[in-house]
Length: 307
Image (tube, rainbow, N blue to C red; front, side, top):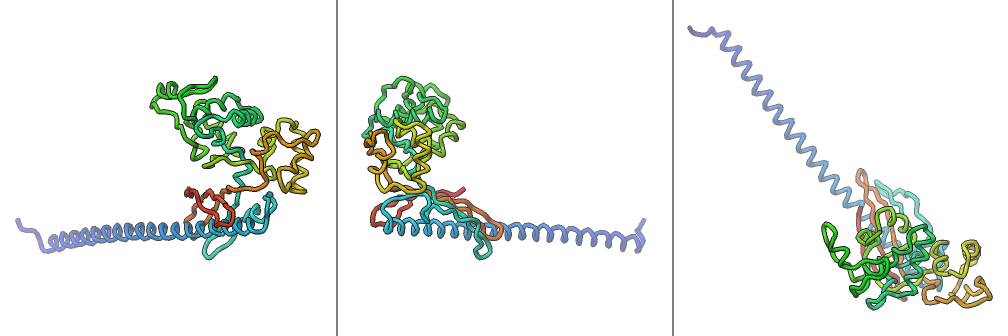
């Protein structure tokens, strides 16, 4: 039997509608993919612009620190570099940031000199741990992690301990590059590291603590002859009138004596960290950089990372 012309026309119409629907679906999918691709390109462009803003902010921080080095012989927290920049509008975005004096913290790498543990510096770290209500035996573990020998100190750990872990690894035998490296050291879990983070740093060479910017726990660890109350009184005085040199510290010590570990103290800072938040249109980024300031030189960037 032959189909009637009307049935044939109906079938053709249905096929035409199916073809149109299919073409519309394909076109819509292509448009959607194009829109996604375009948004990705725009996002990458905006992120690139946001990073350029943070780079400019880090350079601005370097300029501020260079100017401060030329105009001041000692550092304290209320200088221009210590002013936090609140969220500030820039073209189609905003930027905010702050400079932190890393010399206000105790350098973990001070623990070892020429491959050997510095007993006096390990005692400083042990006192800092105690002030923060952490076990002072952690100082021995860090000393073994950093030193060049394979002999474990009481409370410490050398390769024999770490090679039994899963996965196994060896001690570093070299300076820390970041405070987070502590997480590989025996006894330093995430809670301990976060407790320590505001008070310690990891700098590439021995670095004295700036007594004008140091916190109470750090000063108490460096000045055991003072009680915590006396340390806080010292901080109140130095915040009003900064100390020009380490010798000025004698007026706050019993009997006007010179500090026993004067080489571990300073009123000048060499290391600063910069943290910048930036946003451009829909993209945002955070960068952190460690700067080393040297006399008569532009501060150099030791490392810079993005979050």
